[in-house]
Image (cartoon, rainbow, N blue to C red; front, side):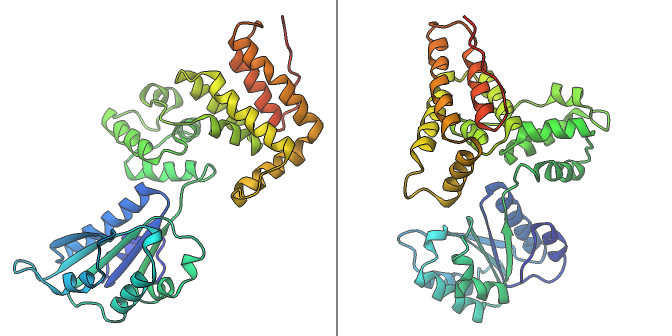
Length: 328
């Protein structure tokens, strides 16, 4: 049976399934879902937990042997099986399907792994899990969903944010759920007046967003000028040198002009194709020419702020119509 992450707590209040599969690309959320299953199992008498890592020397016969080999001090046992998506091979498929057909009484099997691709979710073993086990698929929290996710997490912690504070918090914590949870815990300890205002939040929360030059260029390629400005602000505060971001920018410009190389991931290829259509070859070539200003200003050959120059170039790549002024 499919169980949404937000439905899991209510599900765990009832009888537990003999097997659970929890998978996803966000480690924090996968860990939290597993912790919920473990806590519920402990509350229902599964007092002993055995962690099993599937590695090169792992024998799938150990799975049933461990489940059947009850401890003298515990009537119920939880098996915490951890493996990567690549380890769901034929042997794993056969062993897991056999276990699902005849689960060991008084044992609960928790299988955790990373994100499974669409091909793996169409395999016989995964369909068997959907039929006979509890399946929780955890999806990453994207930019659009971040404010709602943060709002729910704050409410669980007894914290309310006003609209501006929530927007600020979402931008600062983008892409770093663990840091967001840590900051929420910090806010609980501060006992701020509710709802928390933007000014109060700015005083309490450090910028935990971590970006690199590739994130900056990708934001421009995706046509996200607001994100471009935010990432540049973070990179400048972290003391990143503008030439580090400039190199990625120039590399992507040349690839756009020459055309995407073969073998790129489909999502990457689409990103480059859309950016190329949005600007056109003449504009891309002009951007490449203008990009030399960044290097010249870093080296002191031309006056001006290299970060500001790079920002204007990236905004043009993002589709914002601006004039790049080169003042002596």
